[in-house]
Image 1 (cartoon, one colour):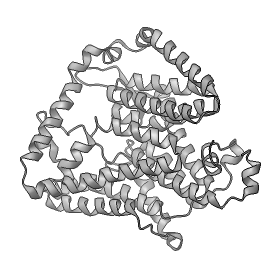
Image 2 (cartoon, rainbow, N blue to C red; image 1 turned 90 degrees about the horizontal axis):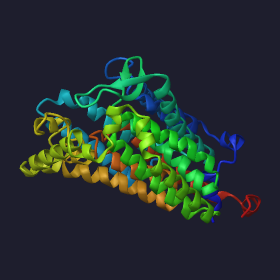
Image 3 (tube, rainbow, N blue to C red; image 1 turned 135 degrees about the vertical axis):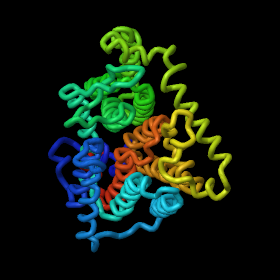
Image 4 (tube, helix red, strand yellow; image 1 turned 180 degrees about the horizontal axis):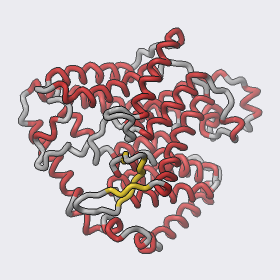
Length: 412
């Protein structure tokens, strides 16, 4: 059975409870997290609503500096270390100007995490932050049908993403916007036996199919499976939930061809087994090999501190990035950068396990799979998830202050 602090975070208890016990810090972070879904929209070249929101949040931190209590722990050390290594990599580049933008994005993400996790949060703040990431994903799904944008490549021209004023996101990265909403609905459906929540989860998966992103679909399915397992493991109606899950799976398998027929033909073709041996799938693997071989042939100093941002384009066979955030990180920021980056992942996962953050844990698994096909180690929604795991841990710790009388009233 859930402890009181986990029930407090996992089961809001309606809108009244959702919007209660909220601090100004939670409101500021909630607004920032919602803006992360618009990081592909260009206000002016190189500036998005997400980046503007990040700078605005730094200003908010500045005016509330008296409340900031910097945490001296492993996560803070890893974040500071990644900032330091980023600047070293930037200065070591032949043309540092070319690396300013990716360096700024990474350092901004790290800085917001350091300061964001140094403020006091309530359970209401956590619920609002989780709510904003779920709503952001739903907004992206809705806008995909309201304002779709076709993705044109030499392989397919009928893939769809959101189009806002001519700005469109990469289809793989767009699937990342949907991860937290999907895992939330799956965990909630099987944890509470409210199986109607499977419907929005299926709609989200259909939206992912429309993007034609195989890596995105794999990550979402992987996240959904983890969310299903976590939800079943804590469900009070495990047998009923298991039967419902098996029923949904059988229905989806039996209607696979019908689902594919509902997609444009060129998009559906990308999800058949034969297409995985050609096109972008094989190109990505070749790019990983090129980058790793170039890394092994580098000097010891370059292996330690990296070659700099965007330098993988000089060693891949097609002149593009590595299409793998972890491979990109080790070549850009070296072994030190990769250790800090992977350390942030491990620390976040351990935080989720400790605080029973099943939605966040399933989402981290999905993002890890997705970033094995993307070079965007600064993906803002993913970094928003890192911050959410810290906020959850703080809220769970604060909930220990609740009295036995309140535990009794919660039904335990």
